[in-house]
Image (cartoon, rainbow, N blue to C red; front, side, top):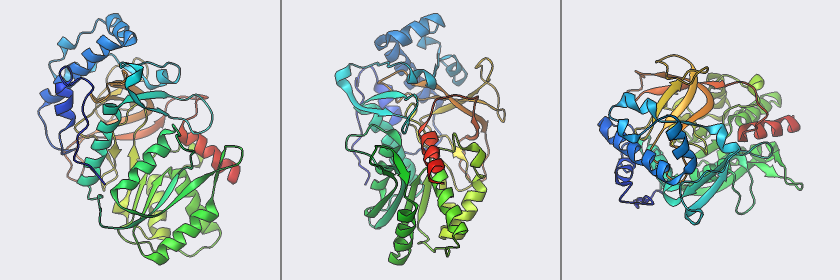
Length: 386
């Protein structure tokens, strides 16, 4: 279950505003902009003082944290491309302070090497705790069965997606856990559709809520095979929850619209639409973005989203499509506090769900590349099993 113990920043004097800001409990409340600005000033200075790379970048762009006085000034913070971490290992803490090392790729391709001190991994975990609590998904007295569309891993695995999906099992006590991507004898993974169906049919008979986490491509594959095989629809407990993540990267041609995936899930598994949610995050930026019941990615208070022009990376306005860029003061272990993702997105306001925080809509990945994310590696498994 969740814990009331707050993690502590690596330097409580130099990062006191980072600590107090990230400790704010309500993920979607209205806050004074100065709280975010002060925390960002501290973390920028922290990386400038502790990372030669980031100090050089700031010098090159003639940036000083002292210029951060308004929300608009945040656009001036030097950013780092998420792709940079696939080729460089950059730290802002001593190696002995590294508490966790995660990678972003499933099996092959370049891997982002992301290093966390204790604070930098536990702070976003605490944020996820508070988001799950805000949505009413922390149920410590409700035994739950789990289906994880993620990788079976060996002990000590550094794979980020598997780490996250297993972490999500703490919000409701696990009765049984089924993992869909089984490790093969050669170290690769295979999609265990028979095992998945057996588990789902067993879960229906047991009558407990079911929580399904992981890659949407495998949920879609499960539903498609159910239809092709003429299997009877299931009626899982109405308190079941689907929480997806990882996207369709590398299998965009086979992706189905999210609305179609949700419709199939309700029809074939019996889980109501408002219990079907998508999540977005990455090892380079661990702030959790979770869909509301209108399926929009609202931005929690610990983050700011800037959409940047694909040609020059300059900020663009609402409703325009560009690179998704994140600002957050939580990351102290490496200079990923201002990071530009390879995802295309647009920024919006005024969601009918009632959440007053802005939200972004993903529009896909930019360009073509040989780099393989977890979702790409997972999609290749589907290709081998189809």
